Image (cartoon, rainbow, N blue to C red):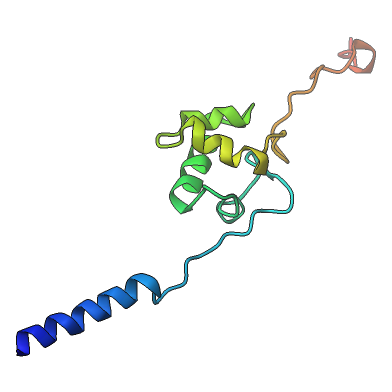
Length: 120
């Protein structure tokens, strides 16, 4: 009888836990405007549905290793991030030049008229 009561008790406890979890499920509010994957921090990336801490770190590591992303599709190179998942995230992501990034000037050398001639 004691075993039966213990089983009944644990079944009830486990059954209730399945319907009312102790920790509420975290619902992520999507960002109000698209997140720039070339400038975003880990915290900013994690605002995007489908991006958690691990994926955010992979994005930052890829950006650091290979430079600025040219397209949101570049994220497909990240292991574990496939086409379906990317399509769900796409509307929350954008790509533009990295702020403060190195920009190569079109003409790094001043015109000859601005260069002082060496003394004779």
